[in-house]
Length: 319
View 1 (cartoon, rainbow, N blue to C red):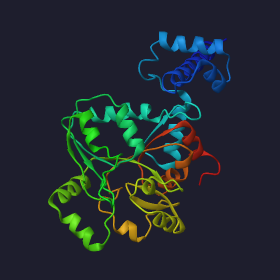
View 2 (cartoon, rainbow, N blue to C red):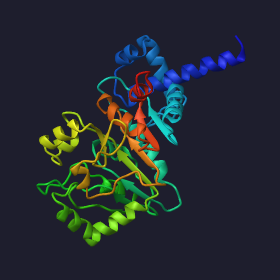
View 3 (cartoon, rainbow, N blue to C red):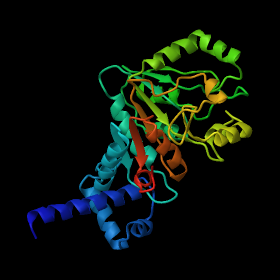
View 4 (cartoon, rainbow, N blue to C red):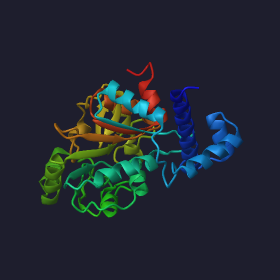
């Protein structure tokens, strides 16, 4: 065997060891489940996890870029014109390794020494990512909301994250304590005229980067489930061709924002804004159509997703 072939074989084994460790440590799978997932014996699973631990591939997180995921990242960048892409290794059906994978990506962003302003969306995925973050020294940065966190009944969103981000990174934070959507043009003008809202919106417009979730608009759309829109409004949006939402702004399958009354009542800030990078975080089968549409419309410049979603986005029938 040539040295090159030997190196390739060793890299392949290390990749498999890292994947097995990821499934064990992040996915919480048993050795029998890992063996079934990877198509190997239980004994080999034990050896691979032991090797990953011995070689330092495993700490709290997997410290090894799995080659297949790197290839998917490059393919996503090439296909959708992304500046950056990050793909989390799959952890098997019923498990979500994306938050644990995305957390250190954000940690590295917040560790930049140059002061920056980060604008944030909200939602389940972003909250899960922030909860996985370690505390970092980001006191030099500012963190601002792109979207309101109050429902029509006055209740606050359970998935608002700007204060959680600031707690983890110790930076100044600027929430938008307003509804996601106004009920009338007069109400919209009133909300946007409030000094604290105007200050936060102005800051968000000048942000160095936006970090957002990508919302799906299926029958269980979070916007409806969380009380920000009604079932009738969701049905109307879907009939109008809605495919997904970015910070409460609804877009179609081509990634074009709908000319819809609800979009016109949005109190926050629509992204992308020219010159502002927008990194989206999301994955899972239910979100594939929304993510694909956002990518088709060039609404994102960066994407953090999981292996299964990346493959779906790159499949032959993805247009």
